[in-house]
Length: 115
Image (cartoon, rainbow, N blue to C red; front, top):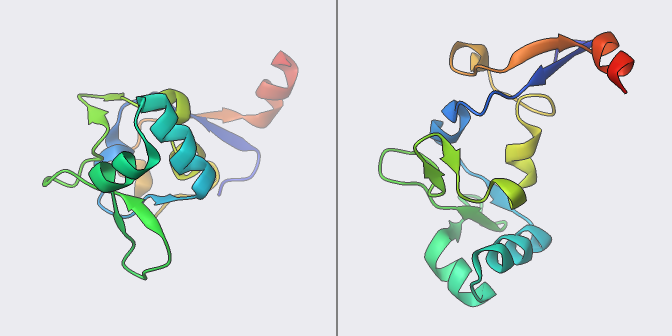
């Protein structure tokens, strides 16, 4: 991570097209299923799969590796999206993420002034 910088998400959806797992905690499962108006059982059956390491559940992907909840560039569960999604790219990222992510670097001193 670059110290002294916060990346402001531009909601381009590019991180939602990156293949990989989106692990889900129990509170996230509850929150997303309630948001979708589904029973927890139905949400798990329709939208999750067992993680590769068998340590929990992950959101499923579309065949092209997009998140199942990506609709164009919009997240259908934006208001309750998983912590992993909310944390990108400030709390975690991957090598080469800047080539696809449109987040804008904002010096933390500018953020502190606006508060």
